Image 1 (cartoon, protein in one colour):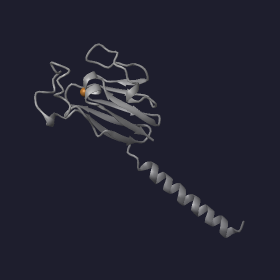
Image 2: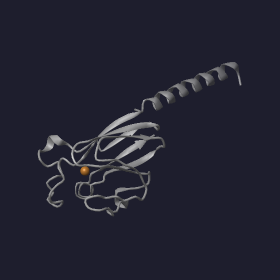
Image 3: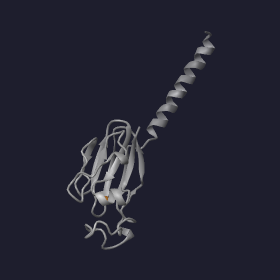
Image 4: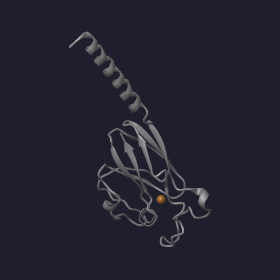
Length: 153
Ligand SMILES: [Cu+2]
């Protein structure tokens, strides 16, 4: 190998490494997901009297539906109304979730890695993967598809 070729090689390696670091560091180390939207209605955010009245769909969403963060980063879950954060390990999909809790809660412990209170939570994700996030309030999960994803890279 000539000196010129190896110098070019070193330059390419350094450039690629710098580019890789730039790409990795471009991932945010935090994100926010909001559970519920109080702006979409009033008086509907208390525990519904009937869990089958379908009146809570519009505001019972997770926004945004997915976020991407770097491994070791965290997600702030902002709770607006009657909601509870539950997070499942990578590999668990919405169809895997079973409603086993005392109504109105899902409470499926299989593969669950976090269960919050009924209040704001901050969760750190150390391991890469695609994590299912659901609202643990069963009618929200079942009837309003209140679930989303945290992608950790
Ligand atoms: Cu909910």
